[in-house]
Length: 304
Ligand SMILES: *[C@@H]1O[C@H](CO)[C@@H](O)[C@H](O)[C@H]1NC(C)=O
Ligand SMILES: *[C@@H]1O[C@H](CO)[C@@H](O)[C@H](O)[C@H]1NC(C)=O
Ligand SMILES: *[C@@H]1O[C@H](CO)[C@@H](O)[C@H](O)[C@H]1NC(C)=O
Ligand SMILES: *[C@@H]1O[C@H](CO)[C@@H](O)[C@H](O)[C@H]1NC(C)=O
Image (cartoon, rainbow, N blue to C red; front, top):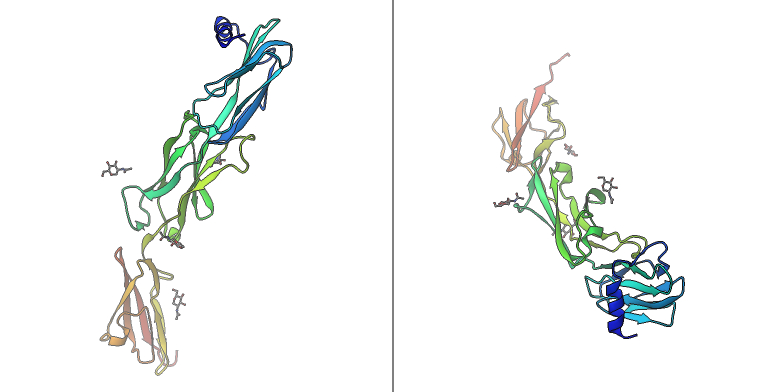
């Protein structure tokens, strides 16, 4: 039987072809997941006597009139619209059968990158920012899950199962963050994962972005902001500890009811045995805010 005659039979009975149960065509395997450029081979078997058995496909079309089995084989699959169909022309009804191969051709992304949207440099505590993850050249996008991590913790995932495209596309995901000071120094990452099902590679192929180091500005914060009262004992050392956390690192200044001595000018901690009774106010400041803390050195009242 020539190819033209074959095509004519197929055309003639296009609408009487059945598939699924009763079709007697078995694809082995019934679902294939192939990486771009990788080889693939699937056999189609007829469960009852068949006149012609073949594969209809833009590449590697083939048929047989002798065997109950025919193989579709490609050494390097690079065709994004390939949907091979196995067909059989039988002696008995149903005379025409076909099975479409469930074929997934996948490609890991060329790149996964992460950046801040409309902003560069450190973020400020309590404000809202957007982080953007961009994925280049991934297929098929409906199997993609983008996972967002802060440190080791997954904070968000974005699935693209509502899209359909067999050829590579570019997609992106936005994470809205309102950083706290605890997130200063945290690393954000975005990981593209192709979950291709049990027939796909295990574990699923993943591509991770470079980490984005979050720098979070926050105002100077004292561990204990309450005023401190210290007892004055002549000749004994007194420590005024004004240490505050903050980003950028706070700078300090002191004011006092006594003339401020040069040696205490910009230190966080003042230790001296020559501090006289009185009040000392320390100011910790960075570009966001100034915060003050008061120390009172009081003379011990005799006999109490
Ligand atoms: C980023 O800024 C541009 C121009 O200022 C604006 O058109 C765009 O909507 C902004 N994008 C986001 C996500 O805020
Ligand atoms: C995505 O995150 C949600 C919680 O936000 C979780 O319940 C779900 O299992 C995650 N999905 C996947 C595919 O990991
Ligand atoms: C991000 O932080 C890590 C470790 O904290 C450091 O090794 C890396 O160089 C930083 N990357 C950038 C771009 O600053
Ligand atoms: C000063 O206070 C900070 C916490 O506010 C503490 O970590 C540090 O050890 C203190 N330093 C001295 C010398 O007491």
